[in-house]
Image 1 (cartoon, rainbow over the protein chains, first blue to last red):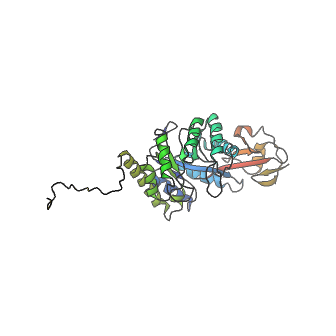
Image 2: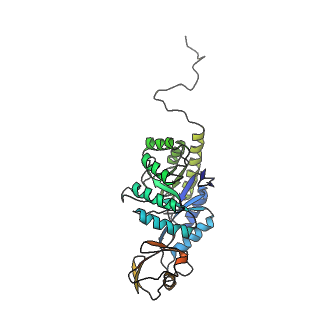
Length: 256
Length: 65
């Protein structure tokens, strides 16, 4: 998979938040085999310097980082956060989140398009956290986004793909554009489902970090993503309403 | 001078943003800064003179999804 000119070996991207410990986070990341981890920026205390230790652990992993603008509720906030992230993390990549609603954490698609347009003009390579809405997708692509990251379900909900027909339609509209399911997955089967629909990758965090054993779950998701991708490439059969015998009927005994 | 750093009121002696960061213990840290909601790049911190009441944000890498 290629995103913004970067070739990726893994189709799983993993968040770094909510793990029981930094050591378990690092082990889970390794077990997932991911190439990209998502990170964020938060207020730093000059006395505690908590962010410095975290950054040291992430750098040791030697992976690509995708900084997010999580928690931003306006285009202006998201743009400033992205500018700060670019300097700290040394990457033009940004997982652009502009949040509309506290309860659903649904993207504010108006602010998202506005921020994407500005950030692309500043040379950022934007990974927008969006919905499956085609009109919004068109505007994000017009703004210069070369990847789209529609939600599967609300962030952290673990519900899997809430609008499969909508996600299929988005895939059909953009057959060549990298599409990543971001948010809402809870089980490896959800990730496999996304990949079977032809999505290029999935981005996870809570499903792994809050599992009883995040390291085992990271490995389970890695295998599910690979299985789902292989299934998509193998061209699955169409579902039918009626049974059709798999064992040949021709040549059966006791037939007239 | 009284400013607000990461949402908390602070009394500082330095004038330039770079001086104030050193004064508050951020020397040698990987941080990004904004003043009054505008990004201030690292190479602009020495030339940016703070004023009474300015709101300074000092952010560092953190866990994210």
